[in-house]
Amino acid sequence: AVRYFREWKDNLMMEDPELKKGPKSRLWLGKSSNYVVSAFVGVLGKRQALQALQDLVTTLKEEKLVLDIVAYNHIMEVYSRCGDWKACISLLDTIETYRQTPDSLTFETLVKSCLKAGEVDSALLMEKRMKKHGIQPSKKLYNWITQALCREGRCTHAMQLYKVMMAQDWVEYRTFHDIIKALAKGGFPYKAEEVICMLRSKGMVLEPVSYALLIESFGKIGLFKEALRIFDGISDVGCQPDIASYAAIIRACGYARDAWKARSFFEDMQSKGLKPNTFTWNAMLTACSRSNEYRMAANLYKEFETCSTPHTKPNFWTYNLMINIYGKGGRLEEARALLHLMENQGLPFDAATFNALMNAYVVHGRPEEAKNLFEMMSRRDIAPTAPTRTIMERADRMLE
Image (cartoon, rainbow, N blue to C red; front, side, top):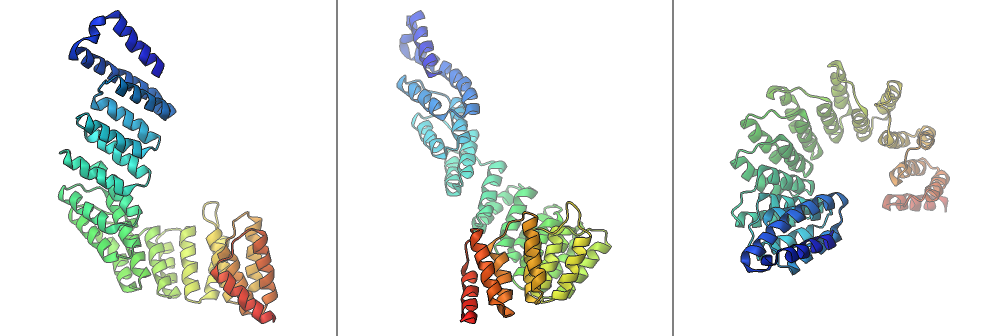
């Protein structure tokens, strides 16, 4: 394609020698090359022939043919699709060198390319360069950057952009849900609640999942009363608690080591016609484990097995929880049976699975069984963790 472009240009010169003279001829050829680049990029974008495109750009520079911003945007789009964010930034430098004016599409492509490569700081620099060119970043661009900051847990910076968006009256649920999620998971539930209140003041009705994040965040840092306050207030703001909300308050009960309170929420959920999913069952079993309510956990597990469906059934986390619970309760044979059940179902094992059972054998005076499990763990190429080594040291001391 590059060779064809050169032949096309040379043939034009031979057919009309006047094209060699004056600035108008150079401008005409430049405009023509824009069309060639646009067509060329249409093919390259699909095939991601990055090297061929770079050859074409080099040829255009050698011939001193200046492209317009549309052609540069086409080239930058190909670089972005190929994941070469550095080439995108380099192309922006070239655009500025030739005194072309980048537009909003140029910077949107640049930011998208940087974020795709995980270069959030570079994306922020592009946003600043965009402002220097007198171009106001769009809501879409702010959404991309804010969501990327939230994924990295950079709540403070995300909040700064959030305030800019609020000042522009750019309220979009998905972006602000990401901010709420980042703040809640980062251990800042009060700030997350502040965002929710501001969104409500703008007339937005939030989905229950946003409140579920807030409930779990309060529960995780030991503020169960605050978690309960949020849960009780969901119906007051125009929505009803869903499965995610109940799972969150059940987990909050688990953090508070109150399995009976968790059980009351679990039953209340079912009385309202909400069927527990695997996630909710696991939350309930976790609450039992943290509260040392092993008998309740065993009964719940049997109930879970009885009402299992193809979409709601015990999974890897369920079995890990029950091996730990059976081990703590001294029901070692049942715990070992679950290990075999996981193997028969083709479920993966990890160090935590073996650690729970090995620790139970050591606690109940059966270090030989713990050693056998450790050998089984080694045969499966599962790397031992720090707790594994501690358990094995205790088993060795018991065998001395």
